[in-house]
Image 1: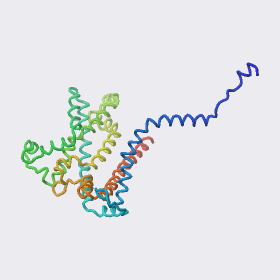
Image 2: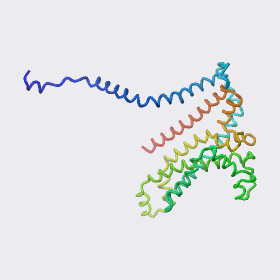
Image 3: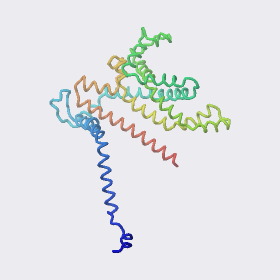
Length: 312
């Protein structure tokens, strides 16, 4: 073969498909080592407890772990006929209906205030967000003292004689007020970040057209915050349905006056660790997991529909 033929001869290469498969295998092999720690922890602390919980819900297991017997769906049938479980679910839903709108509206108003104030912005942001950094027990004990009928500051400052923590009509609203003060900082931070991302030229153009502050808020700010509002509402619904810490701490680890503050999570723990019915508590947990998953899926479905409508 001449020198020219050697130069012009095509190089012998591997098939493109085989080369892509080999490189893909190499990429997966190297990437697998990076995700292996996370997958291991996820399997040990999430997947296995979930599978174990479903298995326990089909048994009459007790807290000692002995004498476990398979009973099928009996725990689920009992749970669906249990009035205490439905009462606890109703208390959690009632708390959610009270807390979510209040937290969403207040977080938006505080974010608007912190965003538009000219002096001491860092101080406003710190004051609004700082309560969120407190542990739940600290926040609960603090407001338990504030709501004390005899020595609490709430009744003293406002001149009230309200039995906040001893009357069934006021116990849950008191927990909502404490939760509002304690957790609004997180939603406030989300709204503040979203407000800072709105282009300033939109407001400048609206001012040139003669739009006032209210019109700019209604026609620019609120539409631009629609996505973050949906996120805040979804996160608050999921968190509120799982309310436990503040209710238990403020009520001294009890169910509250006339069992008015016993939430779903609290009832589950009582069945598992007070009545020692681990199998039944697991069944209740599975039911609650299904409810939470349904809420999350409904949120995803609504978001997808809104996205598709906006794309049209």
